[in-house]
Image (cartoon, rainbow, N blue to C red; front, side, top):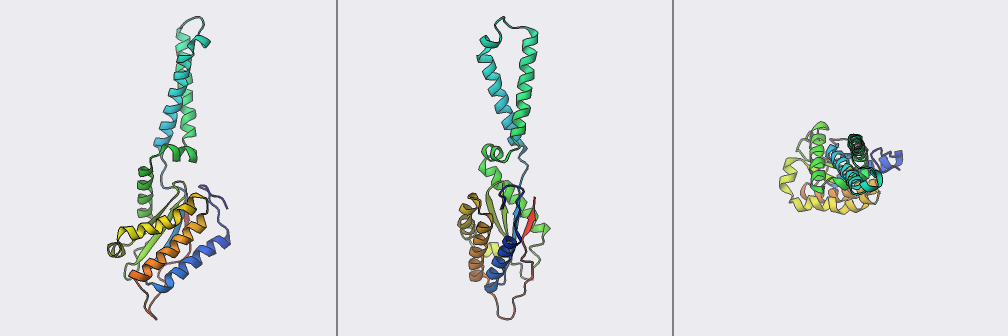
Length: 220
């Protein structure tokens, strides 16, 4: 199984997630929608930061070692070459800023959290998670680039459960996510969510329809 933006799941892994959702919903009227996305933002600012860092580093090195490459003093041509090399260094740095490890290194954690929250909000609306008769839908979204899991319950559920309880679902699985166990982390968060939902929104015998699909939603 790949663990980058191009995550490829086997049929067995997708079935494992589906069964985890099915099991979690057995004792609650709530509906869980599992989702995996490659990334929640483009983070173009990371490209600019990487470009500036490399350009300034190259410029500093050239200026501090000018005695080695300018033995005959400054000329207009030397200045032009200096500018050109700095521009090329910025371009190379901007390209490096598109690589996932560099994006993670140069993007503040708070900004990643914000992007994941926004992506989850759009997904919640796009996949009509709120379209349950009692508005008891819960989206559990894994964002791979950010190494984050976001749990987004419908408003009635959110108001009935303290924020700390929803955070426990994330903390229970984020360690496995960071080690590359994407499916295990997601399944663990689904199981933990099911236990919580059984407490606050227990199922009723003979009246527990499966209103939303248990299948994994996967997007870039």
